[in-house]
Image (tube, rainbow, N blue to C red; front, side):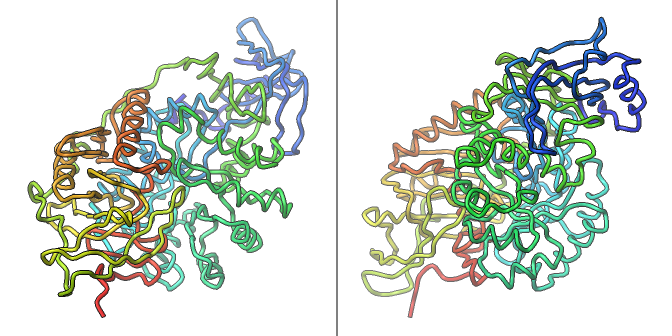
Length: 598
């Protein structure tokens, strides 16, 4: 059932009441399962759930609601859980369209998401947001949007394909299904009263919507200023101590477990060791790539991880359902199994495993016995969405070499140090050789060349820097997935392969690529905004597996290296990044020279 088909409670409340009384019969009854009650924290055995008009009419012994035309699903031996709700994620990070993502997420028990499409917004602005929002509204997966807040992520350090201002956000808050403001990454702008950030937050609050946050700093005074400015949640918490501080200040804590960022193990200690109340804690994925969806799951994997760390299963499900619904003020419709709510139900054999055998959304069985049971609509992106890589012309190897400003045989440079399974980077230095006036990468030190090329407006702008921690020993990699402005990011051991990788990726229309000695080892074409594939999940999974193998061929053994690489250009998370304008020190919020010349 799509958004347009989904009926609001006042439209069907009379029918629900009559079914509850037995004077009308249910459309569907799930019989004799153990109900996961997220309101009381109880497991209630031998419970039925009766459904009419896509909503729950009765919970208990629903024998009196069964008629000759009622579909009956036997849940004996299984748990009946509310569908899972992901409070913060970027569909673009799955590399899939919203439709293909839904096909992957629904079988894993995700029945609703709050997507922040700020990736496509950085490429196509409001129009890009509208494309993804419209696609989501036609799906049986409940797709809610938090309107992107920071496009570009910073105004002074980089250039994106488009911009959103206060009037765009105010207009977006009027769209049906927009439920809040996307993660407010420019926290310095918030706390120091930047008019754009203040205006966006005010527009959201005035619309009665939720302001979601992004606060990776340990500065408690800044945190309190951030909260006082109207931001109410954060998903960048990586330590137990940070989580406690935020919860004590009334903030809603989003505990993240994605493909590359594994925060549950540490942050969930606020529950297992500090025993805080969990009302203000949610579980989120943020960024998940296709292989994780297939091998581990979606939000069910995050719930499972919380359980593995010692959280009671019902509590973990609460953090992945009703807590999220309440945070976004949608608990009148979703989040639990009680009369009046949308009938989004999971039948699960083992709560510790969190693998649903049956998934029901709006009273329709959408997944059962390992197979999707419904047809999905075919959303076609406009041709403009496929034309997103605009370079000034073919790139040459000469553009990927960095002249030195010193006269000696060595020079000291700032280096971006990658951290495995972390969204953060570290600011390091390295002493590199200078040959014929050109600074050389040093594979023995694991220091390779990095480049960021403006790809939206064909300006020809390119910046160069150095990266460490990826382990590349040969070849080059490139990506148009380069958070958040999504310029063309290239990294390699030699300028010839770097130029080849960039040019081949531009011809492809964007995506990710790995090359060696002038040959393509693997690629994932992402023709929708240079961010998403137009292919089915199984094809994208194979392409990504080949891509990961190709990274290993070049010497990189990091987990999900392409996701870590894609964040090297994000100048709102400490400590140091590259943008199309140059090397950005996020702590100082300014561009700094690559070469350290005293």
